[in-house]
Picture 1 (tube, helix red, strand yellow):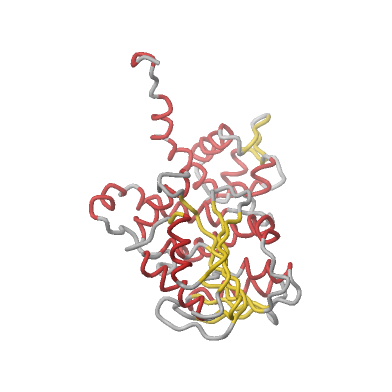
Picture 2 (cartoon, one colour):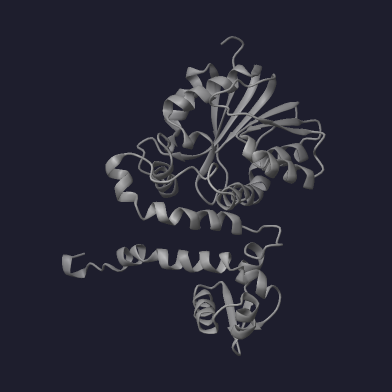
Length: 335
């Protein structure tokens, strides 16, 4: 292709793609999809329920229709199959919380150039800030895990394991699914005190209080109590520096019996660190929000595991919407 034949369309589309993101965020924040539910409502109906301006609401509804998230017939709006499945609050596969978490990240992403030049974060951790942001983060993780766990959990054999250590388990979604899959398994979640109410509420929904307990611990600074035969580390290493990742893995291994299984679930970069796209972008997200976090390659995480005395390291592939992957390993008899 000649220089004259080049078209900047894709570049311009990428540059303005946040317009669509912000339109979706507004629809979820205003709970438009839940308001419509299984009905067909006019823009006036929706505006009245929102106590909002009819013109503004109509423009938003039309934009959401153009995005394929609503259908419009005879000036009445209804949800599509996609929005009904994922954007109505009482839907079992609702992902609104993670969308609101993305909304809360917009301001920091607009200052990415500052973070790149300074090498320092420009936002506070979502787990430590105000209640609304903390809830959207924790329940957003629940949203994602509820959609992913049914695909992921069957890939991991815990049938002969009896006690799972869930490091940074948040609301406990994976512990719940592992226990549902393995009736003889118990799990202990280690996470910050602010996470406890969300975890206990979620565990109670599945009536697993007798098999899943929660310990309020800063696992980076405090010791891990108990002895386990399996450990699950899902999406916690990317928030830490390489040195702290090795520290967390070392603590986890020390809490496992010889022959114990360690499982790491992360957004895994290729070994040249320049793909896949989502882990590469997520590494920027960690630059924006953490002092030392980043996405890691399979080679880097394998080295961390080997350094902690873990052998028989294997990669488990599965169908993930965001290029996450799993590494497993077995703790040796001496370490």
